[in-house]
Length: 170
Length: 337
Image 1 (cartoon, each protein chain N blue to C red):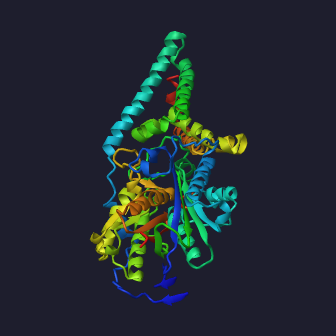
Image 2: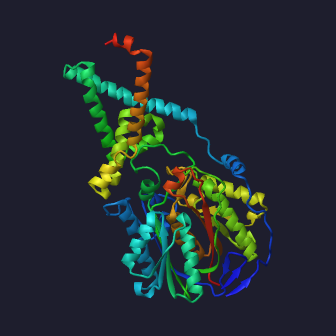
Image 3: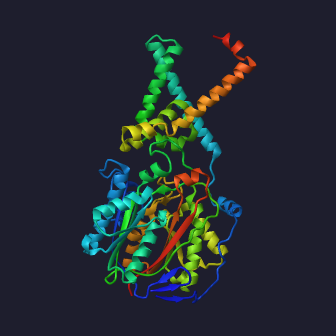
């Protein structure tokens, strides 16, 4: 195996040398812009639509089963979860999300999607190590930080006694 | 075979690509190159119970097709050089188990197509093997599952993201025979200009492609005009314009040739919902073995340089805030003289 030094037409191009900062700024000029306004409007429309559907379901339970708005809350959430899981397993929810952005991440349906998608995905690894261990892969952090936030807010209420006039409403 | 410069191999008795096999999934089947692939699957499952098994099946099918086209049996193959994107390169390893051929597993992320082809050529050119198979695969859902989120999870992808190609491409390289020849290869070095966003791989990989193209031209003494086309692996809509601009700035006369990208060729980027374009190991493999080699056979192209680019990150490395190291390997393929 012979070794030959770089010969031929050594054209001596400029080497690739840019600092990370320079390159980032340069690369950004080639990136398609992300339309914040379009995304906001889509999120508003889809998020609003999901909430309006939820409201409709709640009204249905109140009218059909003579429930109070509070009693209708839980069955409404259950129906929204069911709808979200059906759309997820049909492979539709992720397509809605690509269009809607933050709009389809609204609590009930977004949360159900994050759990069911992980459960479906990891079914191949079995019920315990797959579904069981991975179901909260994405939703877990929502629960953790939701609980932490509730704890902090609870302390604030307790310290400033805001709870006193909050109670009067109930 | 001669080492030229620091990292280019020039093959004096160029190895021949005797045959190829390409298999793709439904999205690639709706793209502009659909007719060029040997087998197009209408669904992503491919009759398998898990995404990982589906990807493996793609590679096994592509290998079978390549062997059929080469008129060879598994026993005629000395080595199989392969790799993929999954942890511990399980697609290639498990496919090699089915093939029962001596196996060298390699990992170069999406540059694996040309890394394996360069190594297969080196083995054949050095006389260490008569028939060597090079192949790689990727599957949209296995990659989403491993690197991003569950496939059905609703998250919006930014326009800089790329769509992983579902498919597999395999070639059989031999000492003698009919087919396009491999005249040279340049091995890439890791380039990292500090991009951390895994949804912007094109920008992360572009400097690696530029570095390898420049080194290849310098070390082989070839000008871009030597090639009818220089084709990058999967830089797509963001990375390819960056590479074009960088090459221009560095004084490389790319106007002498066509500068293409497999990630932009495989899909109709404007119509198909693939964000910036295609990516994944199979992207450059199926476009090269399916589309580009057919163009060489038809006489539309005579000499091409395929520069497969790879982003060598892991889910762990980017979660820990590390930047994305990238690489590009170039292989020069020419019509038989």
